[in-house]
Amino acid sequence: MFGLRPNVVGSIAGKELRSFLGNPTGYVFLTLFIGTSAAAAFLDDGFFGRNLADLATLNRSIAPILMFFVPAITMSTWADERRAGTDELLLTLPVRDGEVVLGKYLGALGIYSVGLVFSLANLAVLLYLGEPDIGLIFATYLGYWLMGALFVAVGMVGSMFTGNATVAFILGAVGCAGLVFAGAEPWSSGLLGTLLFAGAAALLWLVVTGASRGVGLVALAGAGLGLGAWLGGLWPGFTDLVAHLGAQAHFTPMGEGIVRLGDVAYFGGGVAVALVLCTLLLNRRHW
Image (cartoon, rainbow, N blue to C red; front, side):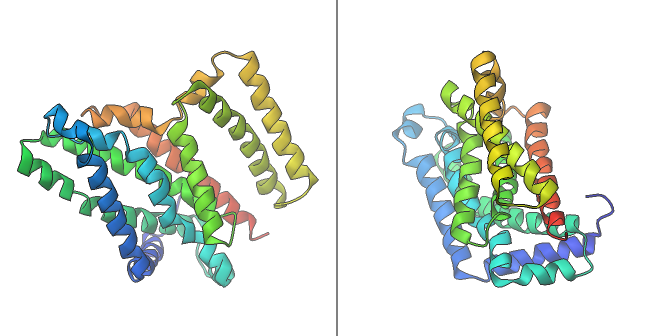
């Protein structure tokens, strides 16, 4: 990721933005996202029952909302390139893998940011109904943006594995769902931890050998499942450790107006890990 050329990254990001916003589907996404977030914020009886001008009702639903809407942005990031065969052309251009990954990421993040800006209509409603704390709203929207940034990176990883946009959406949604439900219940944390071991083993096989199928891939994934299940039964704190990977736990303080360095580092670190993984997978395709 070091030594990247900003002009190249910017060109790729601009291409992604133009591609999405030049398609009517992009505006359907933006409309649905704004409408869904507004409904979650103001159509809940708890909003008026609390008699407070804040977005606490939306905060309870924002993670599941993003779990479905963000993969809708990222599903075509790599899948459409592979389906159309333009990924081979892209890989022959004089650009670095890190520039391609970062450019596509910034383009997808820009699309999400546009939707988030339009959702500031929620603030206009709060200003009409009462006197919201601007500092609290800023921290809340910072949390929305950071959570979306992480989900965009996770969705891009899912899109790397297929040339089918629908499958890419499902993979991205499943990856985001793991971060949403980790920590919600002990069983969900244990399941996520077990699947992480299996996924890490399978990805290691894919990055090292480039083989997306075969006995070795299945064997390593099975070994990862077994190791995760063994740790879950042997170590009582296993589920508690995995629960710290939950996005909601790191967002909640921001929804209350508290911006902690550890929470920002969690989202930033998750983005960095996902982008490095995308770069490794893309680099593997040169072999």
